[in-house]
Image (cartoon, rainbow, N blue to C red; front, side, top):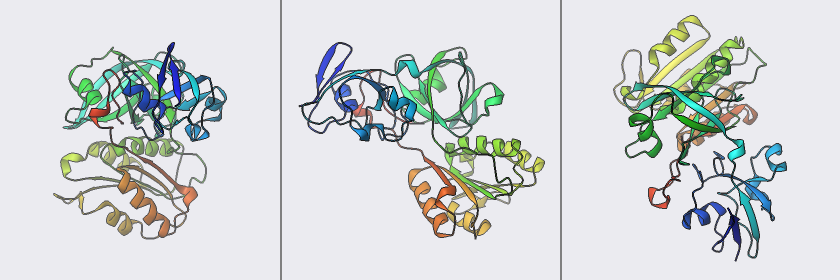
Length: 334
């Protein structure tokens, strides 16, 4: 069997078990979120021993060179002895500055860091509470604004969202890890049409990307589609309409499955996109939100002529089941 040494104690792993699952099963608190190798909140450092290459897929070269790997995708072969350490050195201390409801189930969380923190609007970070609870959220703010802005969906029984909504206060200390993700605006080709689409808090990264593009002088048409089941699921509508009024190249299109009105389309998001942008050849696309929707839109836009190199997507993965979580180290996502 393989075994892992963490904080001076050895822990055996079952056959085919990941380092993360093995440690959690035996009561070790390890920050984690998506458990799918995407959010990187479960990063650990190999102090001694060999890590499978699959556990380093998606990591920056600088992290690989330092020995970091993803505990959730690390399944050491039989007989492996691996000594590991946490990724505390990669975290930046931060403080909550404000908590504001944007809708009945979306909370805007703003934070400042105690040290420089480089990111691009649209990337995502892991928010780590003092007890090790971690969740990943997309960044809606621009670096020049001085505060990081996260949009947190309030989920019934949600560990992090419940704490933020009911118990957290401005001034509370947390930590940030990241950023991660390639879903951000890259200057160049300012005349290129852009299409951005997302549902729910998938709007958060798109809100940042749109404003980043406009500040960079993007002159081509920008189509922003935000979908929800009912009108109450749409948020920042007034802010986005005002932004569109100031920038004629921006076309904001909110959409709901039921309860549409004169200024809110009714129907599926993909149909609205196909109506407004029937031939997206030469476009650049940013897709965020529900994994099935992102995958479907990505396929349909590609089949409509949009190049794969111009398709940027981040899926919002579901939380791990509560039963699989150990005290002080629940899993989950943005």
